[in-house]
Image (cartoon, rainbow, N blue to C red; front, top):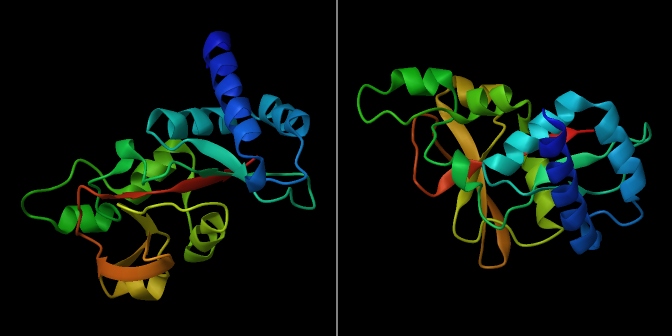
Length: 181
């Protein structure tokens, strides 16, 4: 990552951090920035999150090791990560009308992980997300083995978890990711 690109990303992250202090009470930007500067691979992941519309921000307190959790905080599922089936197996199973990619491989290429259902619910404690879209979440192996995958959204003031065939994809369904720094 070039210095100018890094500096622009850090400014963007700091502005978002300062604007949404309710997401990370007690966390200081100086500590977050120091961890970011020491982990260039994490900065690359955050840049990928930003470039695909994720609007990453710190959520929750730092953990015992001082690490913080960055999560996609865009109001709707990131626009650059929609119309995807769940994983490579699901993509390969489609014989026609294949989407361009799948959520699991795209997340891996970006250096991030899909939110779990618990993390998705934790995110919803910091705001109202996915009021018009939905997001794939990490699916337990037992469900995936049977051909399904899980996704979540927020409707009627509640967070819902649903299932669908992993090979399905919709223009309004994407995925949210996280990275620990």
